[in-house]
Length: 319
Ligand code: SF4
Image (cartoon, rainbow, N blue to C red; front, side, top):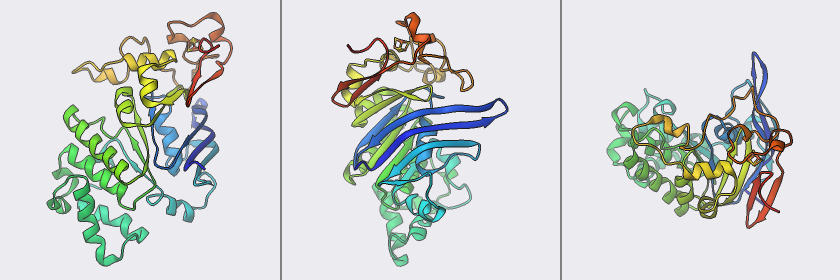
């Protein structure tokens, strides 16, 4: 049995213009100990999909389908069961540590809180566990006394990783965990995260717009566009030989140094992803697709199974 399964998951946000679809029928599984990368531009539904795992979406979101953790549906479980799942079965590393950490609490107290609540070690050993966690992510013991504003961006992100590890979950969800960091620190933090996930035999969902990062850190990759999965495959194979035109554009995209907009618009790909209220008919990618044919704007593309975990959703791929 897979550890995590998304079964035909739909998410819509309530707005003044009605319900807006952010995730449109995603089915995906993560095996125990597997690392799955989810790629796509901002606004393609990656973070919304990941947030369903711990039911972290705002009240304006309506979710349909099933999100199974170890066979139990997160979407229908009671609050008591959900509290037990959070931290100890799945934990999340958010993108901006400064927003996720409590600015008026010392690092040691923030790390100790989930350990005490979930009673993963006797209370007399909580202090030692906190020091061990910081050591695991390469931080000095002196950091225990610090407030978040006294740490660098890389140190704060390491604290976030230590926090996610606090209750030894089976799955870590890392939502663009290094986007706010400079390139050197980004590489260091990713090395710490992926090394620990591997050493502790945890599963991981790593969300990124950077297909190259996912190819070097994940077992498999799923590419999302306009709320749907458009291609899945073994990470290195998908990166080296992308089949879907959108994946090809992402794989060919290299960030332009000094241009923060490069993360939103891959080089060589015209336009932007559609807004939630204006998703094109047929294949949602057709207005930006260089090889689109007339029928692409009329009929939904078919799912093509190419074997060895590779699926592609495109009318022009396959036999
Ligand atoms: Fe491009 Fe058509 Fe394939 Fe969509 S279905 S990706 S528009 S070729």
